Amino acid sequence: MNERKSSIYNLSKDYAKLFRLICDGQRIAAWADTFSMKDADGKPYRDICEVRRSGEYEIMISARGTGYGNVWPFQRDEGTEEAVFSKACAGCNLEWIDPVPDTNQ
Picture 1 (tube, helix red, strand yellow):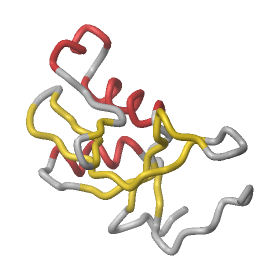
Picture 2 (picture 1 turned 60 degrees about the horizontal axis):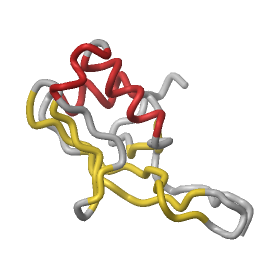
Picture 3 (picture 1 turned 90 degrees about the vertical axis):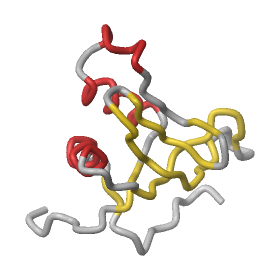
Picture 4 (picture 1 turned 135 degrees about the horizontal axis):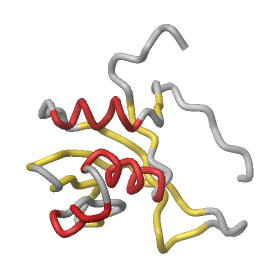
């Protein structure tokens, strides 16, 4: 299964928009690469997960107790909350379901 199947969802890597949504209290469904499981070709499996923010520098990208790219208060010295969040998203190849995709793309 080398080919990536297309998705019926509006997937996005616009992490700035995702950050705004979770700061407004939204909980967003997304896909992230797993860290420990790979297919026969060495590509990481993808897992559906939830992105949510409970407070400043407290963002969880997780599913069933597994974290894929969290942001914690001790990371304040690594940059702005949004910058640390974007780095975490990129690190797990996060693609999120955009409930209201931009039509100008």
